[in-house]
Amino acid sequence: MRFLSRTIATVAAAALAAGATTLLPESALAGTGMPSPWQMNLQGAATEVSEYIHWFHDWLNVIIFTISIFVLALLIYVAWRFNETKNPVPSKTTHNALLEVAWTVIPVLILVVIAIPSFRLLKLQLEIPQSDLTVKVTGKQWYWSYEYPQDGGAFGFDSLMLDEKQRAQAIASNKIAAAEAPRLLAVDNEAVVPVGKVVRVQVTAADVIHKFTVPSFGIKIDAIPGRLNETWFRADREGIYYGQCSFICGQNHAYMPIAFRVVSAERYAAWLAESKKKFASAGDAAGKVAAAAE
Ligand SMILES: [Cu+2]
Image 1 (spheres, rainbow, N blue to C red):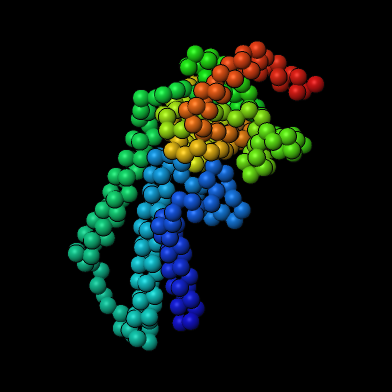
Image 2: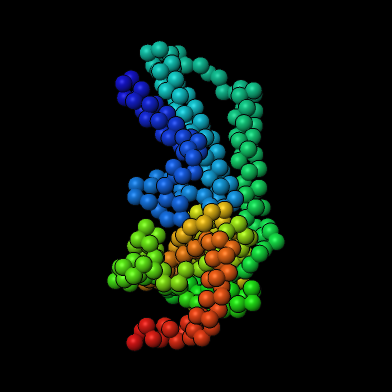
């Protein structure tokens, strides 16, 4: 009985903890844009889609915990009430119409309650609103290339992970703040986008299948050679948001992070002007890979 009360207490504590994260202010949620030590929950939400995903996740947890506790309670009751000593002559009942209808209809209703928000989330993700800018992303073994086709820029660049030496150098030379340059996530060229604008992201791959994933934006989409996939995000807050390739794509799959820096409209304009010059003469990716291999 003591074990039982302790188990119930543990389950209740877990349910409370799951519920509490939704009540906490956003700033109390560690790990937005990148994971933080001992983080247990999803990465903090920075877009409408991501916030919906968080809500849906919490809602599913409520349903899962309720069903699990209900079934556990029924099992305990049955074991206690109908054991051999308490109930020596078992009932011969084989049918109960009301009960059978109930245990068919109630699960159907539960599924409907899950399906409606699920379809709404899919619609939100798949229907791209009128976009303010487009960024084309190409997955390559093992880095990402970004192209800015609109905005009069028509420039592109490769974004490669900084190794430990490069990362230390970048921090020492104040190119990037240490808190914004986590190991295995910091890159040489971040993709910069303006805050509060709808960014249409076109995703493809040049060699094998990769997957473009940014948890805080709530986006995850396949990068497939010969196919152009589309998704979108509108970041609500400035900051640095990291993601990773999430389709095993070869030897350095773990070392091709994604980095988006969300900035004000003015800083974005300045970055555009600078990048048009900086990346105008950039060599193609093939040349870069050949140079790196030497
Ligand atoms: Cu990949």
